[in-house]
Image (cartoon, rainbow, N blue to C red):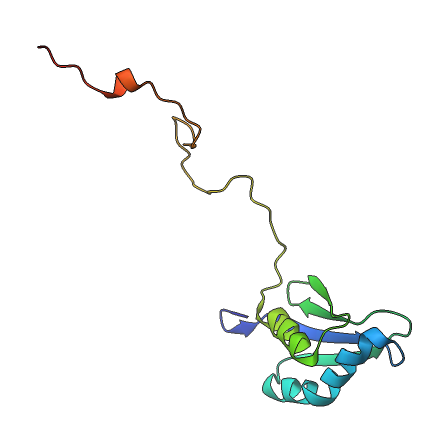
Length: 130
């Protein structure tokens, strides 16, 4: 993804094995989809590495010096292309787990509303003199 017009993915490293059965899909990907990926993305440096005896993976190296590794073991070439495009379109930021379901700058003084909140029904209904 481009942040202020600059693509964040610098390098895509394709690790594969020339012998293993789990690398069959990535070898077909390198023959069919990888040349088109290189042609459509001239800003992206694509490197293939032969790593024998290991499962195949895609490694994205971003401008902010973060890395993301995606295992593509036993995937079809179309699914590997989807994973490569996800790496290309992400910003490379670390995933941050939120502490609450909502984020606000000014939290409620009364507390967070929940479905388990018990209210006194007498306090809600106004009483009228008869």
